[in-house]
Image (cartoon, rainbow, N blue to C red):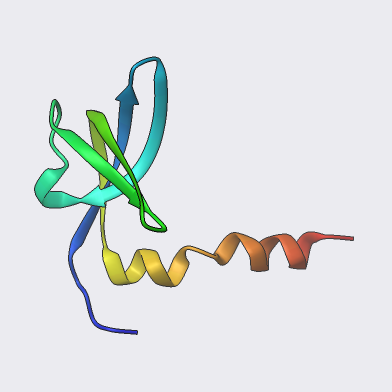
Length: 77
């Protein structure tokens, strides 16, 4: 894993009548900013930042992003 200690911010986003929560880079995570979401080379422009909350290092988020799978596997009967 390459070392990227950028800060990510969990934000509430709005586009038309849709809402989404996403982790975005701190430099663009300010209320009122309009951003483009990119996932698997798919670009989705026009999302407005409604609120910005928790800030965490990108490396930490990458390490924790799949924890729910281990928790689910351990809790299944």
